[in-house]
Length: 465
Ligand SMILES: Cc1cc2nc3c(=O)[nH]c(=O)nc-3n(C[C@H](O)[C@H](O)[C@H](O)COP(=O)(O)OP(=O)(O)OC[C@H]3O[C@@H](n4cnc5c(N)ncnc54)[C@H](O)[C@@H]3O)c2cc1C
Image (cartoon, rainbow, N blue to C red):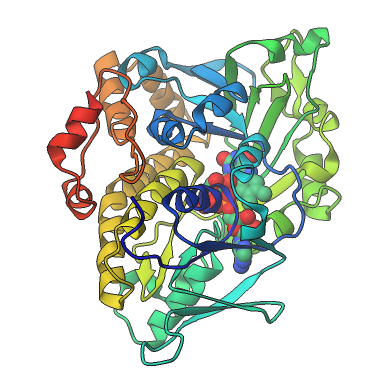
């Protein structure tokens, strides 16, 4: 069934969220263009953990089989202190039974390549650093929205999607507009560019590690673990063995406990600004973290050992905000994404409402965007609170040690409740054939979305059982 109205969508950002939306629009036969800031296609990033909430969508898009091949299941996650004493372990043994799949760990570069392989190359415009946009009056010849890039090129469409990650320039521009219009909306104020809360460097070692001390890399399951620095050490670091027998590592500086107090610099997170293995920022952080111990292998290894097995130019550096935006759309522009799982889920819901647009008017777009926001807001808010709590746990104090101990000893039914709130929502799009939902737990159904897309609540349940 073709879409009711063919809007032209401009997607700013070719990250995980932007590419997923592109694949969905491709399937929905909705015209789109991606504007990508960087010109290169380097393998950047480290590990991402995707969970059962996005796998039915991947199945709908015929991505799941290939995704399974480039990932390893996570059956357990562990947390250690710097002396490599285990503070907590969490088993995911029930997750497959209840929601159909284990969480799986994937290297960002592998996921990126998989998604990219499904987007026609001519839809991606490289070297397009979006600076601003303007909603044209409907009385003008073109109408719609006009996007300006740093190289003075302009793009025109009906809908603009900001999938440009942390410190999104679409969001900043949208909020500036709203401020100029004296909007009373709370989070469009001057503090839009909050200082970053985390700065991470990350990478993936060369593949096919076979030597004795990296024996664990060959394991069929992912051995995923996080180490917390002592109370005077503002770092935590995570490592996992990956498909292809490499090891991915991420080390994060929690700026709230150090640099934040003196006001750290705000650098935009991007493929271009963030990476640069030879850059001084990456280099100085590497020097700070080299001796941190890593809890895998026969001997205790250090992050320095893993860094030495990583191509320096592929080490990326990103800054992340700890901020939840309340305002997600204005006029013809709408925002997407924050964290890989959420960005993929956002893309599914946004593609669905765009498919069912009745016309391209302002009013219809506002209705569609408000449904999108209403559907996604509870998950985003919950996930923001979880990530706030997790980031608080990353500072090692005796209270946090106690909380972690309690977490490791939480009864199964409490974990099930937590997991239900995370995985009950497993969005699929209405314009592709539904795939049978696996696992014991039924899908959460959003009545408003189902009414807008013309599906009945009953139908959704039927496909979920
Ligand atoms: C280089 C890099 C490495 C990362 N590595 C990890 C990792 O190892 N583990 C992890 O958990 N998370 C990582 N992240 C973050 C993670 O990818 C995202 O949080 C998550 O996937 C959500 O995706 P997103 O599409 O919203 O944003 P992102 O993946 O951040 O993608 C945003 C995209 O928008 C582009 N962009 C930004 N500004 C503009 C502009 N003005 N004009 C045009 N394009 C623009 C960026 O270049 C980027 O391609 C990384 C992000 C980046 C950019």
